[in-house]
Image 1 (cartoon, one colour):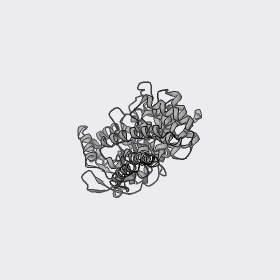
Image 2: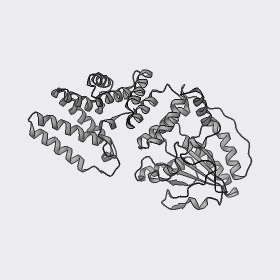
Image 3: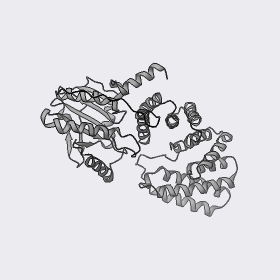
Image 4: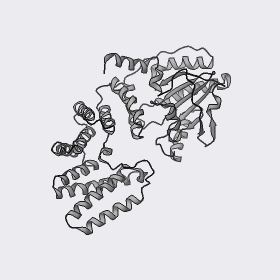
Length: 405
């Protein structure tokens, strides 16, 4: 990327925000879209009715994927909670946390309980609304979490900011004070590096990964591009970019990113597997086979590699080796399904069906009809338990076997 573009992205993250980078289709000065969402107890809250009545802050946020990830969402909720407690009654300042669920489907009671526990543990009093199905997330065009939208008492958007780095806190304090009509001193803090990696690049990567897992490609691509602009030597980010490009049909560009990831990290199993997968799809079996073998030499438990190597052997007429690899794949996919809480929604379930079908084909070709029928019956039983309306349709396609970790 051009040097000037990198500087512009850096400025967006650390100093004054650019509204177009925070929301798609909405800008400072626009009227916000009215909406109604339910709180954690299921009671509807008409947020739109507050527009033009009082100053208001919307914070789109999420649960951290693990305790090892930077949790800017929680950082911002704790930061704004102080303003909410001190100024909600005094200045009529309203703040809503718009929780974006882990998945697009209905939010489970367990997920809501984790949200409640997080709020209680951190003493957060800000009202939390649940955006089931990412409806408001999409309507507002959010491309980073957390994203803050400050709405003036006049009813127009006065301030938009993606993420919540340390360096943004003085600016946030200034903007919240101005919104509430209260002047306050600014703080000064510089961004910190963690383990030699740019923390904002890492945060953007993890957010992009989360969006990829939710199937929100546009929301994935923008933060991923920003992450690579800040840290062009991140092998995981290049691997994820390759996955996004492959899903978009840009095969050659995806291969370039997988190659870059492999050069940056010679032990990167996901990038090697994904590169081999694309070679398999291009029917370049001679290039794919050694890569699959290398992947399995590093990780014998990768069911997807056994499956694809089995298909490769079948396509090249090596039926015994194909049956051996497909048999290993079935056992590993079964274990992955057993270890998954929502088994019928797990991609491993679809891969398991596909593997059983492929192995049944080998038995049929060998004239072993009874064994083939047994495997097909097992595949059918699994398929009958799959909710086809779950949104995970066609997860058995080879391109959907790409891995990020």
